[in-house]
Length: 449
Ligand SMILES: [Zn+2]
Image (tube, rainbow, N blue to C red):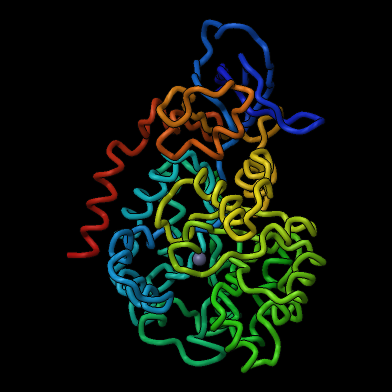
C-alpha cells in the first residue's frame, strides 16, 4: 500500500541541523517506509492525504511499565516514598493475568498513540502467575503486551526483564515471585521462545543490580550481545540502591554492571540519577545510552540526574514515561531542560532540536529500531502531526516549530499519527481502539473489582 501524505509543515533533517519546511509531500511505500520527501511542493495535490500542522517523527517512549498506568491517582494520595509507592504498585501487579493485561495494555498503548508515541520500550517483568506458577505458555504475559501494541497500532520492543531477587541475592518476596524465573539461564531459555513480529522486536533487561545477583548479570548481558539486542537496566534511581550495592559488593551499581559486561552502545541505563564521577566516566567511555524519565523522577522525588553532563561527554539521551504518571512525550522533553534550569539557575542547556532528537532518532535506536525516527527516504513512515492552531500552539511563526513542539505543545495537540504508512490517529481520534478513555476506565476498574 502506498499513500502520499502532504504536511503543511514538517521538521526535517538538514546538513546544518533540522529545519521546519512547508508544503512537504511524503510518499510512503513498500515495507511501510518513506519513499520520497519533497519540501516546498505547493498546495496539497489531489489524492494526497492532507495533514494540517507540524509533522515530526513518531515519538519513541523508551521506558514503560504498562500496568503502572492503573496506579494513576491512587499514588498521588498523601505522601509516602518510592518504597511505599512500590507496595501500591505490587498490589496492582498481583491482580493482572494475561487477559486483563491485554485489555489494560491495549488501552495504555492507545493512549500513547494519541500522545504521538509510535514505538514503546516495554520493560516487562510481570512474567508468571501470582505466586510464581507458570502459565501454559510461559510467555503469556509478554505475548499479551506484543498483541496489545499491535491492537493499538504502535511498535513495541519487549524488553524482557530478568528479575530474580528481592535484593542482592535474597529470595523474592511474595509479590515478586511472579517476576522470577529462578535463575538467569531459565530466564534466557524462556525469552528465546519469544519471536519478533513486523511491529515487535525482542530485547533484554536487567531489572536492577538489586534484582539480579552479580553472578547472573553476565548471562543476561551475553544473551543480548549474541543477538545484538537492546539491553536496558534501571540504574541508581535511589540512593538506597547505591548504599546497598556498596555494602554487598564494595562498588557502585554502575561499576558492578561495567565489571559484568553490561554497559555499552546497545545498553540503556534508565534514570542514572545518583552517580559518582567514576560512574559518569564508565557510562560515557562505554557510550551507554541514558534514558531519562523526568515526569516519573519528579513524581517519585528521585532527584535530577546528570543528563546534561552525560550527554556532553557523548552518551545519547532518550526519554520514557516509565510509571505513566502522565503520558506526554513533549512534557518529558521540556522537563529535561526545565529541571536543569531550576537546578543551575541558567537557561539553554538543550536546544529544542536536541530534545526532539532524544524523543525520536535516539529513542528508536535505543529500542533496536535504527531505521525509525527521521523523516527521510528509507526510514520507517512513522510520524506525528501537532496542531499549530490550538490555544497552546497558535501564534509563533512556523519556523519556530521545534520550539513550539517542545516548550508549548502537549499530548492534547497531537492531531494525526502514522505508523508504517498507516494512519493510526486521525483528527485526534484513534482509528483502531474506538473509545480509549472507556478502554482505560474499564480495564482499570476490572483490577479494582
Ligand atoms: Zn522503570
